Image (cartoon, rainbow, N blue to C red):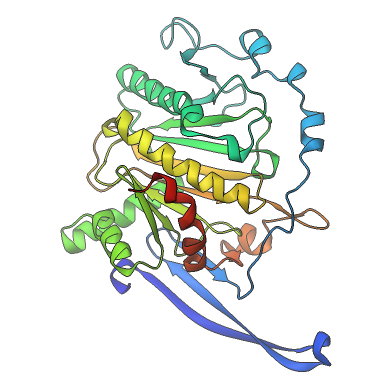
Length: 347
């Protein structure tokens, strides 16, 4: 994996274990570095599993439909509208999905998309057809904004599902970011791809995906044009799944059929998370709107959780101030465990 800047080294920590009469015990772990993404992960030897599904009742009691601005009765009077030059109707709509400006923006064009009328949707209920309108609506918005302001070259579609992942409301919703420049992490991916082309004359993602498929260690499946992998160096403590839209080097190239293939795979990943007692996740999908031969449309999804029994955060000093991730989930094990959840959508 040297060509792609993926490396790992094994290290050992030793201590006198009070659980075994203070006999010496060795604990082996890996330090993995991904030069493509710039991520360093410390893979620990034990397998973390949520012992049981966290109780959702507290979240639902504090955020009932009666006060939810994204529910059908309140969405029109309580959510912002676009100016007429962007959307004469005030909001973008497709089926049961609605897109409107973020009332607390952190970029010039930061929009919110409600996925459906349902106030709460469990991870096991996110079927492709439920997510379809909301994701298609993001592309409607990207296309409209590209016509209005062609300098908006980079976009992302993002999802904080439930409070442990930063979700401020229970009602399922996505967020978009549009800008003239990519965000910092997307810029790192783009820079790595550009450097690879200068060095080899080839597309990084095409070669990388071919190598991962040949190795078979982290290659999960392909749904439509979308390849799903367990991340070599995860950005989350619960592991991470990455996805790539094959030869699509622009968001505008992603067709309705491509998106359907993606949603088929996404539903499989969410089914895996549900079966393993997770209730929350972060997702990001990045791309350039117009063709950029070095930037394949791609994204990442990672579960989020509070560690029992105290509800300890899954983010700590290593990630916050050392820019490394502690992950007690071996990526190659994750690949094997998640594969059966794709069985229904594979030929």
